[in-house]
Length: 255
Image (tube, helix red, strand yellow):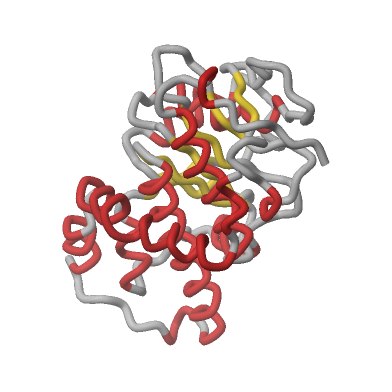
C-alpha cells in the first residue's frame, strides 16, 4: 500500500489538523462497526479560501485510513495534487452539494448502516420514543430516494430538503450529518445512529406497545440539545475523549 510523507510545509494552515481529525473519524466509524466495506464517505473542508476538501482513498478500508492518505479534492471530486490513490468523484456528489451550499458545513458524514437504512425505509421516519431520538430528531431533515447519487441535478433538491438542519435521513438509503467541525459532525452522527439502533430494537415489541412521551417533551428536548450546545459538547468534551480512546487502541490514524 502506498504511503505519503507528512509534508506540512506544502499544506494550508490548519490542514494537517483537519486531516488528523478526519482520519480519526474514519477509524471511529470502523471501530463502532458503521462502515460499509470501502463505500460511503466522510469529508472535511480544508481551511482557507480555496474550495478544497479531504476525502477517503477509494480503495482503503476505514480502519486503514491515515491523515496523510486522505485525498485533497476540488468541488468536482478531482484530486488537487497528485496522489497514488484512486478517488470516487461520484461519491462526492452529496457531499459537494452540502459543502458548497452551507458555509458552516466544514464536515459531512454519510453512512449505510443496517439500522440507519432500516429507519430510512420506515414511512414514519425517526420516532421520538427515546431520549436519544429526541436529541437527534429535532435537527433531522428527510430526502426522498432518487437512485444512486450520481445525478448532479439531485444536489439542488438535497440542499433544499436539508435546509438549516444538521442531520438528514436519506430515505431508503442511510444517514447523513453536517457540522462546523469534524467533532460536532461525528457527535451528531453518533446520536443519530444510536437513535436508529434503538428504534429497530424497540419496534420488535410492536409499535402499538410503545410508550409515547408526554406531549411537548420532544420539543423540550430539542431546545435542550440545540446545535450550538451540541457543538460545544462535541469540541470541548466528547471529541477529546474519543481521540484519547483512539490513541490508546489505534494511534496509526495520526500518520
